[in-house]
Length: 280
Image (cartoon, rainbow, N blue to C red):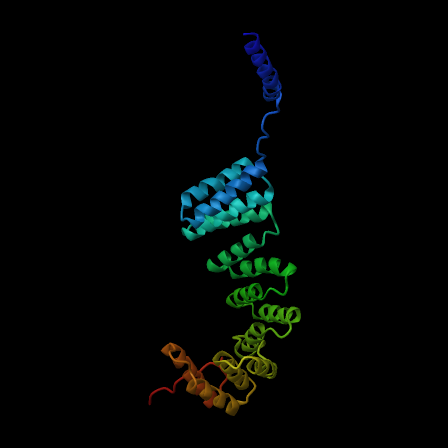
């Protein structure tokens, strides 16, 4: 029995420090709002990838309720904007995009989303202005530049569109996409004050030399016509039609043939067609 008491005493002595340590150990550190929000955003992203839209929405709303960082809240609003847009709720999507930008003014994905939504809803000048916010920091971003130019053209702002293209080429010299759009703008702009045939030819020849494609051949024909070089325009347009890729949409061939007729008649690509003579 003394031996048993001695063993029990030794075990108790060994266990006592552990028991005391457990009793007085600090509680497990609670997750901060930022940590919880980060986990919820990761889960929401996984939900979206799995097509569980409602679960993703619930988690993003929880991020907004919890607080987290301003960027995390902005990301949650952005996610809700993208879901709302996918579901066709454009007003809600716009509100969420704007809230994301309020929380994080330099949030590029939110700015790009808002700009494209504004364009989608026909507010082209607002869209162009929003794209400008993106271009302030990255003037060499060609896709954003072209999106802004498209918005400006749809808004009828042809001079600002040309200026934006010129700034783009200063930031990214030799970019063929910018060269193509600027050459076409100078050759076929609805505003005659913007058209400049000689410069269009200069750009279009650089384009065609760098990328001899059907599109660049069409651009060059347009430029020749605006510069008054109709024989060159006709020859280039005929080559375009003869070497059309197969298959090709018949509607495109019709457009090419209509422009060929213009050039053969001494008209540029964007010139109004003469009125048909009255009968009798």
